[in-house]
Image (cartoon, rainbow, N blue to C red; front, side, top):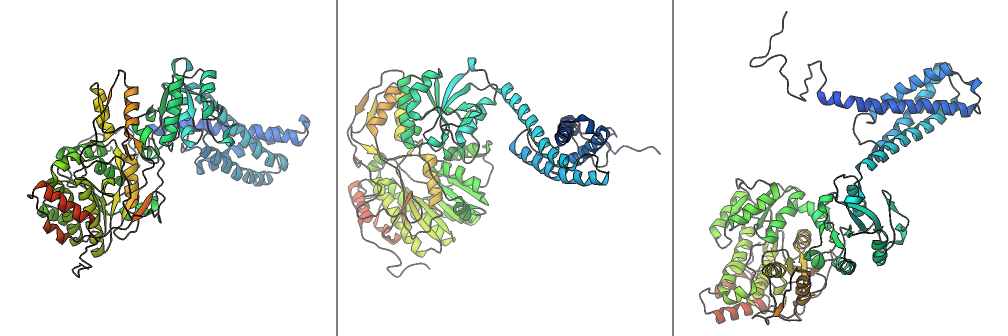
Length: 634
């Protein structure tokens, strides 16, 4: 009886690589893989046969007349079958691992451990074809031979992939840890790599004799000049993802004196657990020189409050908000709602996260935190459990001129967010503040200090945790001093600095957000969590470094401090103690609460001096909370 084709097709119609359980033909990928896997099994079988011959000869002190060739061949064939079956079981011949890797060698050892006793028993049943001692010895010898073949093949592959030193930059790699090992392997196993490592440097004396893929550790960073000269290197690579800004600055100065290029790999916060690759190698940025540091976080604690939760980020289109979204996503929230009044900002953050930017996701919310009705609509629809409030006005000189805008956005907008969060049962609320709120003397500082106090008052009424996070200048954010300086250099200068002695705290946006996410996991009672920003940096030094790096003469001009600006910022105000009970980089500072009812005293239409005076009074007044007045929500 002739079979009939399915409707709309033919019997011979197949899709390449399609697996059909009822069919008789193996898939194309299996046909392609079989020769290589069979070759591995065959090579191991030959190694086992050779091992049996060697072990038998050793047992008989090399006397060939005692050798039972037919019995040896018979047992070798049996042993090859047993070894192949065991190897398939342990994944040795199924393509599970790359040839010669550590995992495959471990599987090879397990295969030998099973094959040897099974062959021992079978030899007894077959009438003792070879000496028993030879069987035990052959297992060890076969393991060495098979591993040796793999090592030789791996070595040949590495040599074939190694880029030519004649056409590549010769690189001295600073660091000999895991990051350096990854980047050295990447350089030596990529034929098109523009770099070839010639030497390693590491300050750890225990690594002095270490080699990574044949590249030796030749000294510490203090030997950089002699090593560059000895190996004729033209590039220095800092392959330490946790390298501090101090180390980057020191090596930058040393490399500059030697007239060699300096490259870096990204810091830990940018890698987020992935392996370093050739594409990660980049020139040193000013952010590397100013704000780079190692930030340790408690992944389990963060996952505990983000994984499977509904998270809302306000100001999601801004520098801090967008980075929050990128760093929250890997923790697997049930929903990440991104809110901003800037639709272009939302488009940019979606594009950076999924590469689509179609703006067709309900989790992208266009809304203004000044609009209470709209906030209620958003909270009713998305029911957030965790809120990161990053929406704010932040430019100090503009808010000095227009204090009513600071009132409407920073203060009233935040108060409306807090009250909406309380009404909708938000469990955790993190308000993003600024170092301008510590001992404030500007409209921006007053407004952010008031929001810290409003958050503390809300925490008294909340069933969960409501806190603020305070930090200084963020490198790479829109409108940051570094961004402004780079724009001035691009236009030919001059670079404008307010005062020769003015200093500021700096941290990269990735590092700041990493600590903000960690701060959200800390149990606090309405406190301000202050990020450790390291040591303050003189702005004049930053300007000079940028001017010196330019390809033309750039002048640095001092313009004088603007109204509301401080010569030196502080992270802690008068009476605030540096107490770090939960994390070495997070200070927890109590905040006197402020009942939102007093906001009725503020009139956006009031004369500018009067409005600023009231803002100052509210920022500095004693504790005044709804709970203290008997009006708290519980």
